Picture (tube, rainbow, N blue to C red):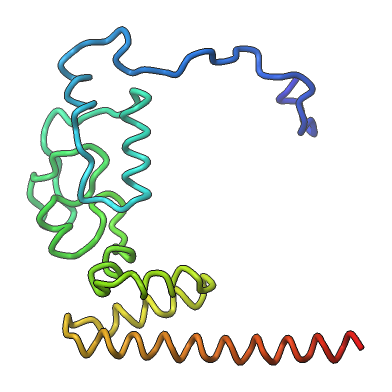
Length: 177
């Protein structure tokens, strides 16, 4: 049996192969399904948006019948299922309405009009990128001097990484001979 203890690999393919793509409005043409298909998911981070779109696509999304209480303002203003914050509280705090985590990517894109900063950050390791994002959030006040300071900080980090790369390359060259 596939659930028996210690049996971690299957010997056969899955029994029912999907021949066609699932369509949530194939047999159901109700107003609820039409509304869900036309609904635009907004005010949430990318991960939560993907989760909610998946729920809508595979008919797992259960809409609210009545408004829920917002965690932030304690009012019954949450209109969408799976959300913890209302739209006003989420935009005011700058967090995702579903998971309540801050928008790192949006802060980054607002801070840099040019894509140069974004390209530099995508080339960095995760640890360095997160430290720079923390630096951006800490020193964010919307002025152009902040952007210059952030760019200078990134250049310092990149210069330090280049020095480390040069040192490690020279060590590996000397160790090989």
